[in-house]
Every structure is written in structure tokens, then in C-alpha cells.
Image (cartoon, rainbow, N blue to C red; front, side):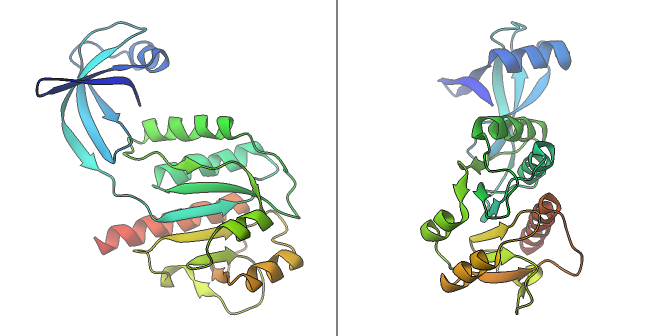
Amino acid sequence: MNHFLAAKGNEIEGWLSADDSHHALRVLRLKTGDSISISYGDGWVYTAALANEDKRNLHFKVKEKRRYQSPSLLSIAMAPTKSNDRFEWFLEKATELGIARIIPIICEHSERKVYKRERGMRIIEAAFKQSHKGRLPDLSEAISFKSLLEQEPAKNAYLASLISEPKTKLHELHFQEAHLLLVGPEGDFSESELKLAKSKGFKHLDLGNEVLRTETAGVHICSVWNYENGRAK
């Protein structure tokens, strides 16, 4: 992500932040004239050329549009795992796969009751840059399961749980419509949470026969969603 952007005639130019400038020059060892990928979060990924070698204020000039990332329609609400590393692995991979929104939810069985959004955004921004994405996912503040159900519409909202009730298979979803998919904590959603979700009109999602870890279930959803959307184009 660039630090500053300006238009000069028909030419677009910008300056990288101090951290990104340092990374480009000291880690990647780029030189004046070398190409870099730039995105402003508008969906487009641009090819730009370095115009100087100032380690604190690296100047670049945009050369051309490289590719376009369509807006995603997938939101996942997930209970942060006991291990921060596992949840942040999900944040990284979900960003690479083009998710739109991630909502940390605190459930009755949650072992981690607090999650710091600033830390998560650093993980997401790093994955955004490394995978050359055109859109930065939104990471919400942590919210209780009950509050989420009160705020989010039930249409196209599903819980991925182990409950023995009729479920919709993941590949049967309408991938061209916006969906909110909920993934519970270790130990699954509680019985009272499942009853509350049912009363609100939330449906159940079948992820297959395997019992998946929380973060694995999230990445599985993102992978299938990414594949199905790509196949539909």
C-alpha cells in the first residue's frame, strides 16, 4: 500500500511509506527503474517503476494496470482460536484467497475472549502486499455471538457446526450472492447458541465428513468460494 498518491498530467506517481521503502531497498534490494506492484484498495493492481532510492520516501511512477480483483461477497465470522498463531494463519490465508470481511466472534465455548484488531490488521496488510491483492479485507472488532445475530440479517447466513440437522452443502451455495458464514470455536457452538441462531433464521452449513479445526474450516470455505467464483467467470 502506498503512502501518498498524486496525479501529474496524465502520469500517476506516489511515495511509499518509510517501512515499505525500507523493505523494498534493504530486503528486496530493488533499484531505480525496477518494477513493483502497487494497489490502492480499489481492486486494481498496478505495475509501477521506482523513480529514486530514498530509503525513507521511495518515489514510484505507475506504468500500467496489471490485473483487477473483483469485490468479494464472502464474510466469515469466526471464533478466535486459543493460539493466536492459528487464527492469524487464517487471517493471512483468507486475505490471499480474497475474502471481503472477517468478524471475530466471542462464543460461550471460546477459550480466547479478547482479540486485538490492530494486530490482526498488520497480518492482513502484510498478506495483502505479499500476494499482490487489489482489495484489503475488512477486519471487524470482536463481537459476541448474540450481538452478531442481532446485527446481521439471516438471509444467506449459515453456521458451520457439528449439529445433526439438515444442512446445506458448501458447494450448493449461490456464490454470486453475499453470504455470512459462521465458524465456531473448539468444542463447537453451544446448544443455547444453536437454538438462538435457529430462532433468528440462521441455517446450517455442511463442510463435509471430516472434523476440521476452526481455522482449517475457515480456509476450506475461502478456497471453495474462490474456486467456484473463478469457475463461474
